[in-house]
Image 1 (spheres, rainbow, N blue to C red):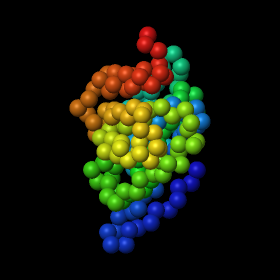
Image 2: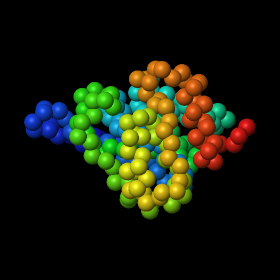
Image 3: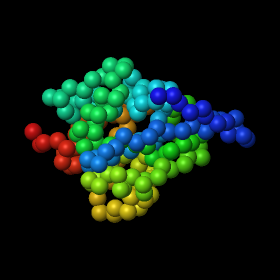
Image 4: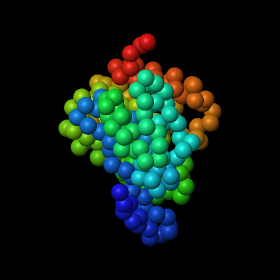
Length: 187
């Protein structure tokens, strides 16, 4: 997949970055929302493409009996694996200006069109925000989807920048949400 050239923002000289398309299906029950892909993810055109991000490792550890291919050329297989479990993946921001990968460097973000997602994901029951920047928009996302009566939760970021949480602590929080969404059994 080729990446669209980024436009320079006239007054700042900072690139206007474009996000990635959603990974969702009609069977998506839990939508995981990040803020915006980091530099490594944009370069690879893959969600959570930085090798130190724990996103894919946390998902694999949540379903240890169902192996996930983790190699460099396995993104399509990992995406299908995610969808097969009722998960969807997207970001709050469709585009933004940013130098580097930190959420704190995001400027002038444009929010994704969540209203269009509702018709495509009729089984959607829960939204989990991967970190605080994404969670800042929980109310807007819920309102855009027009679904006021389902759970919206904030998860600890899987980013390597969130070093204050151990892998085990992150995994426990993520597993609890998967259980609540009915995607894992309690055993």
